[in-house]
Image (cartoon, rainbow, N blue to C red; front, side):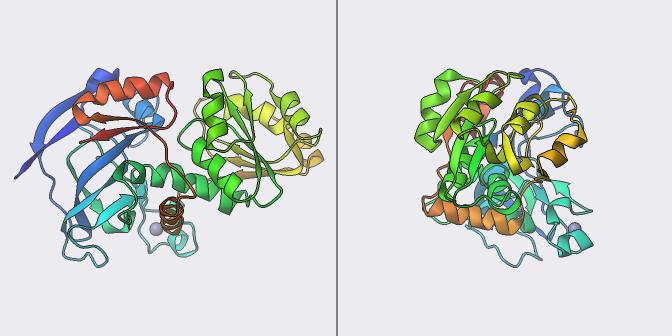
Length: 342
Ligand SMILES: [Zn+2]
């Protein structure tokens, strides 16, 4: 077999720019494996990379998709830790392992960082360094979202905001790919969780996943009074913000003295505006969360395998329905990931 099916993009635009084609199976470099993709998550980042909102690192022809899981089909000559038949998931980027940032614990900001792409296809050539093995009791549909969703949430909740027993945690974008695992992880750490969502019809699902309280608020709406009321007037000790500029002001107002504000996502282009005095009056800590390290992804896999975190699958579609998958993600009515089966 020398060819494969893939969704190829020759320009940015509506979902119809994703063309299903038969193309050659890629060659692999010595440090890469050929991965037979079993599941490929469709994230909102894929949507903005396709529709033209996001232009960084976009080139044509391009196969997008960076939430992959699958089976190692063939290994390059320099691959040491993987063998044919291994089940794996991946980080959303490849790091060099050699630069100063890789050596001091900041591989997510590696000087030679290369984004993973190629998920909307039957096969992809992918660096060994990006892949983490998954046990048999973790499904490919769950595994595909462990890097960019579960793993990033673990980075935010455990390793950046240091959520612990007794914390009260506000999670914005609660029903999204980052929000759902953030709720579960904060609960598992012993925190009380307040989830913010735009849709009333998602309230019950968020409570079922583990939120203690759900606050419904549209973009730009000030929900801080409700959050203060839920916290005896104190405010939350941690904000995990997966939305960005449009919820910053009410989220910051919702925060208690000496609170930790973790910036995880920015879905819009607008800047935020704040008087610096408000930051020191509040003794606030503003924290940037960037992607997921390899060791964090390994821990995310263990947490899912142990049943502590439950990745949510909204729908599974064949690769041929990639345009419909994008329309679903753009509409944002579902809870959990839309997953493609190439
Ligand atoms: Zn590096």
